[in-house]
Length: 209
Image (cartoon, rainbow, N blue to C red):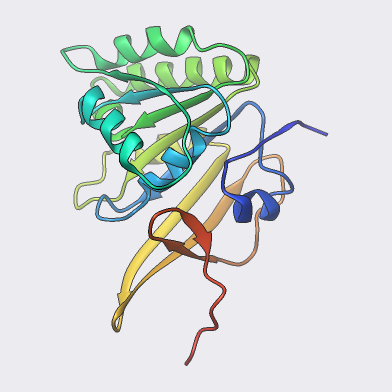
């Protein structure tokens, strides 16, 4: 049986028979106006983590991690800017050590690079390195008004897709996680209702029609 890597979120790890298969790429699809970053923060507590930030500065990411109430680790944060983000990200990914976490936040910036063949080449190299090092990569995919044209490519490369839906229902904010894709394993058939306040936890309250 393939080794499983914990996500740091107990409810998810139980649903997934212990976690994500080692060597997997995970696409976390969520609205930018959500608490999805809690998933990323809690992942850093599980093992050594390299966090590639494509939008926010490294200092901003580190401040967010330090100030969150959730349990976190001490990730290495690198801000990727400039004219060649795919090249810069690729160099950092190639140095990822064994059994590590890689967070790309957000993948949208890389999906927008031209020509598309360069992004596909990056994803192939990423997939090979993550597999060879028994690591886990989480690609933060923003749901936005202008979805990057290569989002389908990202989700096709991904071994696992987490889809977080955030909606306002009456006077409450509802967060439901579905896992429509789980390559090499069994995807849960139902959605998971989550509480995303200061950490990720399951909502055990009953829905009232």
